[in-house]
Length: 368
Image 1 (cartoon, rainbow, N blue to C red):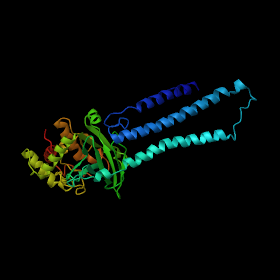
Image 2 (image 1 turned 60 degrees about the horizontal axis):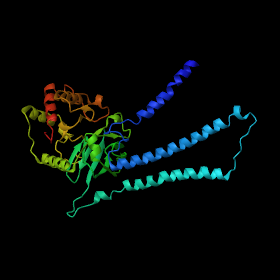
Image 3 (image 1 turned 90 degrees about the horizontal axis):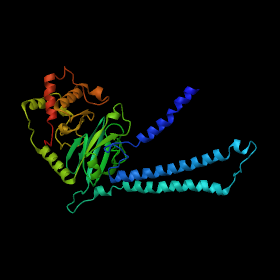
Image 4 (image 1 turned 30 degrees about the vertical axis):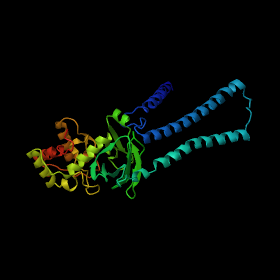
């Protein structure tokens, strides 16, 4: 019995640690550190609901403590019967009206914010020349990667979303295969990506909060979509409007430029890229529009933070090369259920793999 009691003593400690640790989070990932107007409004609504719940818990706890301490049998005797309140109209009105008031306090701002965040009129606003004023991004979710198309700019990329700060960015989200859910925790709530219909919403990225997060946020798939659901991440790079416009220009120019190779090895790697059929699934031109290839666009592959969203791609060149080769050889083990084919020794020699890796590492738009 004593040993059992000793074990239960750890329960309050575990509960306290869980409560404290639940408030921890990095600025690039935590919904508790909002990094935009939408996230801040949703955070305020969440805090309002928490405040209401805490108030209810406090009131119920006070009533419970009073009942336990004032009406103990040892204090009042075995035959004492408290005043009966059954049928009290005053009490019935109180415990009926108060919950209604609390629900209204939560429901009114919730409904108002739902309609406010659902307003997509800003996505259609045009300037005097007939050009759309807001940035619109088409998002397509796939097993297990993300594609981002900028229809007005005529460019497409994958795995890394690039957006300007301090303005609304409108998203049209859809899925290619199964239901996914698009979520950038620090910037706003999630929205489902369905196969049959397109959902729309907008987010904003605060420049000061973005700077605190080194202009890099993490996105997640928030809908169980298969064995590699937890590995279906993407990165969000934020920048000022001027830098964003320069990035768009660089992507557009890269789409018009002729294919050039840094070395003979890179040229050999491109030949392998063609011969093995990689080019049938992966575009290396940023102007190839969404939905025209069955794999991620690789135009900026050499600049990305991660290979396949999970393996480091910003370390030394040796580590980058090993991670790329590991992915090509063992993609089903690293990301189960993905549609990347396996290339073993019979399909791809080590020499060809080295050349292909060099080619993939050379795929950059920004060479700084």
